[in-house]
Image (cartoon, rainbow over all chains, first blue to last red; front, side, top):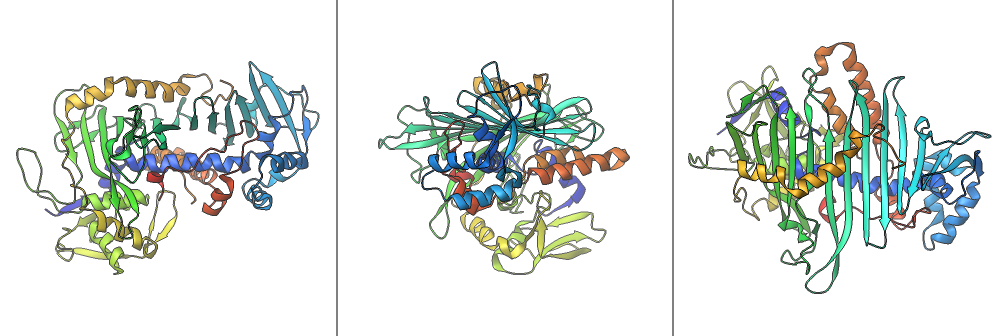
Length: 476
Length: 71
């Protein structure tokens, strides 16, 4: 079945998938987690002087921290790291980090605090008026940035890194909070790295990732709500998908699912669910291991499932899975479709181009080096989704548009020819695992998720900041 | 390697802002500036250099992106 979609409509649906409108489920975790992990690496350069300042004793007035002292400490502690390369990175990330600086170092309730200050400045715990600060509580170090976009619009960008050697875990967090219409809203990411012993006695790192987003009630046509994304069990990654952890503390990633539980405060108009009230919009992503043509392993969602119901948890619901092709089956409620949705979902999420949503046929164009051609109605408002089996069969009155690049959700232009290998890979692997074979989400599943201890615990952990007087607090 | 997360989130605030008059452009401007400030500056080569650097405060070197989340 060919589909005509209203372009604005499809953007609206994408925007409802989660509070981060452009990425879906597992793929959203991928973006958030890799950002958080890389940001903690970048902070080594960005917060170089403040990190070193935490080693200094607290003083009532700003103290001068000499760059040469910080660098001397760096040299002693980092044998084997190229110092010139590190300085180059500090210069690139934070040019002010390469000179002597006045710093306030304060102790408060067992927490060490440091922030950039002026000469002779009296020190306090009022770091939140400063652009940049750092704190340390035990093994956890927390990074703070205040971004002022006007007298009343401050955003707070917080990360933390807990290196808990005693428990063999490392925990990274990211929090971004701001006030919107009098309420604190924002984003909270947590990545926990642990370890597990496998049956062959090897030790493997495990990962436990979660993302909570809070956007308050709807405001006009702005979607409100909250969402929690997490994996159901900590996971490890090995080439052998049959590996097991001897104490069952973690599963191979192909035996975990990534769940996104959204409460969306917006009108929802789907096939069965039509309501002006808030809905639960739940994703369950089954991840699988795929082998690329060059024999390397890659991971994609084999079964991206969705369930939608009014928050009253009663009445009509939708439950579907995104697949490349399906046959009409009234029992299962499936349509006959062949839009190549599995491929477009995997590809567009991987490259953060769900806003432009290249179709299967366009992705095939990319893979084969053909002109990348999308089709639209004459007024440009409706996109045409050809069947993946007959890309040339386009409707009457449909006009082609050639793409040389896409614009991703970060506003960056990506040349289509730079995506060729990825397009080839995704088309190559698409049938390595059955698509849509798993049982679809049911209302009972959704109720079980919502009342599960794991869901409740992670939500409590990640949402707690939004209940604080200062959700950006780095002294707790 | 430049990536942005929270700008994605902020863009949610923009959905449907078009008809709201002056606020929407202010909000959009903030969103764009936040987006810029959130972009990672380090590239893949820098990350490799940084990977073995220890934090002075807690002696940790943290870790790199899990294999299944690498692009």
